[in-house]
Image 1: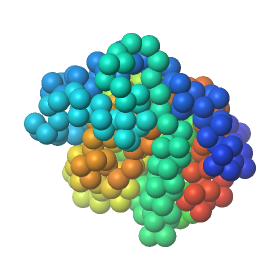
Image 2: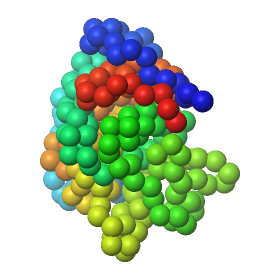
Image 3: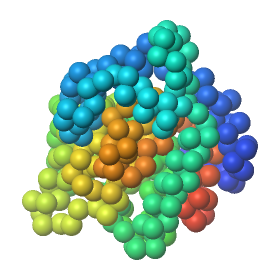
Length: 269
């Protein structure tokens, strides 16, 4: 049965309007206070906010992190703005979708081994499962994790080509890089080649990029590490967006991305 099938790809202008209307971009739900707290935590060396990347001592000034997030995500530039609303620039979101589309097109052209994973099963799974179906239909190998892999008190499971963490009877939200670490370690133990491309978010993306894999991902404006990783060349593309809106709101964006990749929209599970 179809799961939120992607519609016909919208124009750039129509997609920008949709992103703003649904608060995937524009005035997003994540508060300025939360954003600044996370930028400061990253700069202070809190590994939880590094999302599996090793940032060393290169980002110790929260002001530098804010400046980067203005450039790559479109948050409000004024450092004196400390409370209330923050933003994501829809044009930056679409620019990043175009770059991600190029990476997906390359993967299809090369018949790549692709691994997809999300730490936001209630939101971003809607995007990842469409990408997995389209890539598989186009001839890519969509990798499944080995069975009986565990991390963070849960089990790593795959649904519709997307790896997620299961715990306590449900799929859970996680920022941790440990599930991706387990998947990649298991591939190496079994003598299997690592993926040519990883499509992910949170620590799933950070871990893959930190291990030198070609990685594209999605990141909210309170997840600065993936944008830092992109700036340093360890993440190929980080798409700025609110990563936990109602799943069906992502359908036009997914259709646009598939079109940018040269892939027909897919609605198969």
